Structure formats: structure tokens, C-alpha cells
Length: 144
Image (cartoon, rainbow, N blue to C red; front, side, top):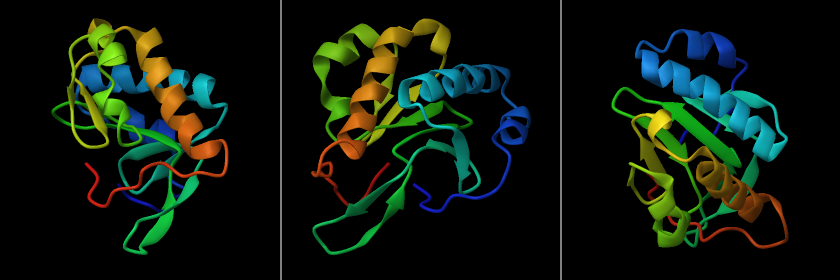
């Protein structure tokens, strides 16, 4: 994940998303993430929309800053970035609807097919795990 935010316009980025479903879903996620996190969106790199930020340190000593919650409307699917481990929570994921997962990524092809309340809970849990309390998430090098 890109770890530097930019001054680029989130709305201009979304307006340029070619795939109509990804563009529509990005607008929906913009509202959902803003509501769940209480943060305003900003661009991280060229294609990640992030909300808030946190500092991470890997066991290797590598460290940096990343958005506390984020998504990206990619060509094949919308990617929602979650703290490692949340993409393995069968109780929530079973109720979510069609999706696939990676180490820290949840891939969604169409938000119309998923339970947005479950998605909001996943985002809320992930965001809280990096913004509340002194402990950082289980930071693993690699990523999506």
C-alpha cells in the first residue's frame, strides 16, 4: 500500500474511475468509511482513498505511516484494506456476501451483492485496532 498521502482530489479521482460499478461503489464506500471512521478522505498515492492514519513498525524494524482505513477502486474489483487477521474472521465474512481475500485485502466486485452493515463492522473493527489503545496491529511485511 502506498504510504504517503497527496493533495490530489478524492472526488476527481473517483470521477475518473472508468468502470461504472467501481465508480458507483467508490461513492458508496466514501460515505460508509467517512461515517464509520469520522475521518475525511484523502488520497494516498495515486489510487488509494484513505481515512485517518497510523504509524506501524514491522518486526524487521521497518516503519512508516499508512491510512487507518482505506479502499481502492481497482479494475478487477474494489479493494478494501483491513488489518491482518480480519480477512480471516469467518463469522463476519460468511455474512458479507460474495468476496475474496488476501493477507490484508478484501476484494469486492459489486457492493450491491454484499451486506453493507457487515462491511461497516469489518471497517470499524480494523480502524479501531489501529487507532485505539497503545497496541499496534499484527504488522506483517508483505501486504496485499
